[in-house]
Length: 246
Image: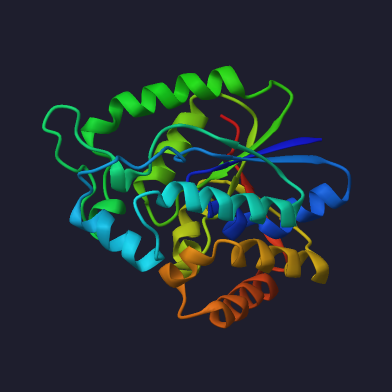
């Protein structure tokens, strides 16, 4: 089978589905991770918020270039192919009319989509229509945690009307597991894919490759390892979700 995972950012599929991607490639399936917001940072005029994130990641102006190299290493661990799209991360995007940063705070990242992103959504929808093979199995985020880039990927992918699975955005799902209750109430079906212990190790290694991002969610690599292992045991593997048929 040909699995295509849509990752809003470089680390999202590794975080949410790394163990499953590894299991699939070990079984002879083809798995690809498509990072959507992989475009370059502007040469200048970063917002103070974007600057603060670069400092936390210990990266210079070329942060997306460094993060792409982390992702290449992560995909090597998983045996996955990779593809990168050209739209930039939301922390770099500016309103096309006012030129103000559309997402200049942590709160804005997890709020409503800025109207200035309507053009980007339309562009992404067209790019995916051209790129996704009709026989591929598509997997994309539920957008738990409400990150704007996760919301945009889900909206664009749903416009394809392609048979698909959804993944629970980790670690956002662990912060509030009640987020999944509405999907259960609406009749969504969840299938748990078992992950072996070697698969768990590959999953952890794929996240470790995104070294700059560990501090976003955990105090250090060991805390990440414990958290992912606990998540793995609580769920019995990695669950994917199916939307109910209309």
